[in-house]
Image 1 (cartoon, helix red, strand yellow):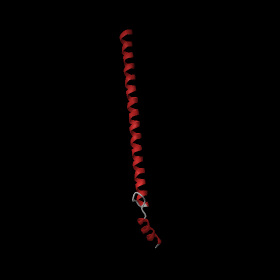
Image 2 (image 1 turned 60 degrees about the horizontal axis):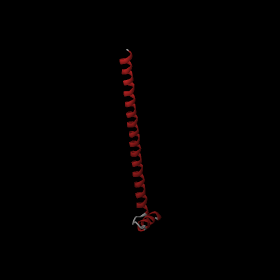
Image 3 (image 1 turned 90 degrees about the vertical axis):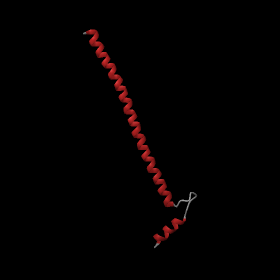
Length: 77
């Protein structure tokens, strides 16, 4: 019956925040999970911003090439 006795003793122990060791571990785990979720969201947002920047660059590159082709046909044909 040592298991049940240990659990009762564990409930009585509290730290300066008023949390039992079990509650403290649960709180730390929840914070870790939330931090990981936020990291993933930040990573996705960074990738999205990079794609938008590349698309904008390619859009202007297309306009420059199209203008050069039009100018070629207008002046040399």
